[in-house]
Image (cartoon, rainbow, N blue to C red):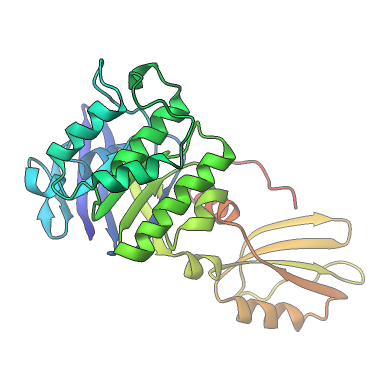
Length: 299
């Protein structure tokens, strides 16, 4: 669905995107994660046709995005800072979206509106709270029935109930209509619940791009305790981090989990426990290899 090939973008001497490659399959929910300044918002603006790349290609469904009006009518974008016309209320914005998106479903729009009973649709959108403005944006975006939805910090400013409500609406659209979703967020715990693919970005590049299942099985957390000092690990164990508290050692190991478990079990520990890593932990350890300054995780 999305193909970004060898894209570079400079602002003066600053390289915002550095030969970036990214691929999002149709029907996927793809989480784009990275530290501040990694280039996430810059590549999103390219995907929305706001920026034109200096080199490389940005394609959606095989077509270049920049100045492609017909293609843009097939996807929606909800940025972190949402723009609405100054004097427009929600119903005015609905009429605008009906003109912009040929598949806009007014009945669906009003059905979705029942999920947000506190929203006054006759009030100017710019006077609403940030959370209510996000609600309006999602109502319009989902009712447009896009093939692709691009989200930048989508549920920032929403309370937990509304966050769950909106993700339920999006997940239903994915299941029923094959919607593709690209979402950039710092809330890694939330992404872990909804995404099936993840791209980790830093310094204008995608460091890795995998399904969430593959990512969670590529790094293993193993807690062990020995009678005495811990023996040296076999040389083939790719140890990312070791944290010791007394006789208990927490090992973060990269590579095939089964091989690591077998090798460490052969060292005859008193106890050994293999623990799942969260997406947040994977993010920190992957960026740790890029000299990203982070604090130790408390286990």
